[in-house]
Amino acid sequence: MSEQRHVEVVVVGAGFAGMYLIYRMRRAGRSVQGFETAGDVGGTWYWNRYPGARCDVESMEYSYDFDEDLQQEWTWTEKYSTQPEILRYAQHVADRFELRPHIRFNTRVEAAYYDEGTGRWLVRTDDGDELTCQFFVMATGCLSSANLPDIEGRDSFGGVLAHTGRWPHDGVDVTGKRVGIIGTGSSGIQAIPVLAAQAGHLTVFQRTAQFTLPARNGPLDPAEQDRIKETYAELRAANRKMPGAFGSRYARRKGNALDATPERLRAEFDFLWEQGGPLFLASFRDLMLDPEANRLAADFVREKIAEIVDDPETAARLTPHGLIGCKRLVIDTDYYETYNRPNVMLVDVGSRGDPIQRITPTGVLVGPDGTEGEGGEHHELDVLIFATGFDAMTGSLLRVDIRGRGGRALADKWANGPVTYLGLNVVGFPNLFTVTGPGSPSVLANMIVATEQHVDWISECIEHLDANGLTTIEATPEAEAEWVAHVNAIADRTIFPTCNSWYVGANIPGKPRVFMPLPGFPNYVKRCEEVVAGGYEGFVLS
Image (tube, rainbow, N blue to C red):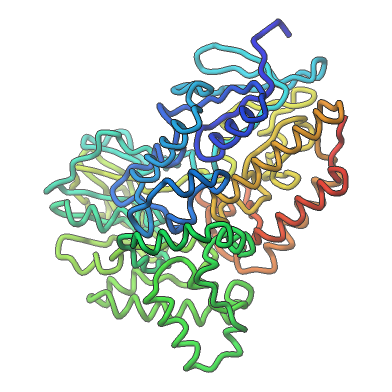
């Protein structure tokens, strides 16, 4: 290896994880270099600028808690913050802690190779720069690699083509236009009501009907915000005891749904529906564990859809089959109500309808299989939007050519699905850390809380190595195998694996079907603490 510029830590990504990690490294006096493909901080909130984009965790809880002054000085305006407000918050953090000088923006890390002779990582960027580091940290986020389906004729469309996860910064003017949107996951469900209010006509191409709950969003009462700030430490501590690391103020879990009377069950579901938010399934202990209990909640939501949507056929197409919560549970503002508008059409292109045959220069052709165009219906469009989600959890990690011991690629190591120890490290890749990687709670938890916990663990690990004259940490094969088995065992106790969701990579053709996140934030944190208390059990420190 030739002599390159060297830093102790390289951080890839300048979202909430990357920013906090750079802060921790600088506070410890370490040399650190951050890289970010975007033009500024914010991560997913930099890219996802589509109409209606907002967080589904309450603003007062979707925020950092590592600095008390930061907590007290920032004021949120809505119960659930919009993308522009969250991006302003991220920018404020970067300014307040002077993080930008340590980040190279508009720069993509293309490759990182581990040199066994020097014990360093060689990192190469898309502009040809190279540097070495002792610790290489991927803080690229779980939902940052946009998935653009390879539909025939996609590139032939002559109108405006956009993806919600890569929304143009100058926006897309849909006023009075014929707009089509493919996908009804979280992004689509947030965007559709806003688009419908602006477009001349909106055609929604639905592949799979989704369960979504009302957010009941609104302005955040300043007096309530002040009350929360007075006891912020207690709220944060209580949230860390919640399965998803948020929502302790609304905790109502009391007994099992299968043991409740029909009257109590209905009253509880009605209360939570009117209250709004994502904690509907936290009302009874067995809703995420027992399919029979879950169907009680699913049937309640199915009834609500039938009540809200005026046209019975449209309501039927919007009604999901199966269980609620095994896919990401979405919260919305007037999603089902939007289908009562005269300028909105729902086209089912999933298993209950006819598929998209191809995209044409002027729209989308939908019809049955067979001879091209046979029985097809062509939808003329001026704007076509893909709300088709992300290559979740592993997409951004595998877009970098990461090679560990013996030159083995991480992509090869994960050919049959991702394997990690604690979601933090991979056997054969010394001093590589993945923030909220596969095998950690990540997307099943409040992401800022999850990233803070990981960054704290990584920072304290590096401090431990330095204090003991050590330079390298790497998981053992036994610990990695046992952890993967543990994650699978926990997931199998729940309803999560019963769905073809992006949790298992089902939205990406050819991606191995592996349940990637770990349910249960408090137990995960406890295990991480036990590993440290046991002298970094399951790792080799050298």
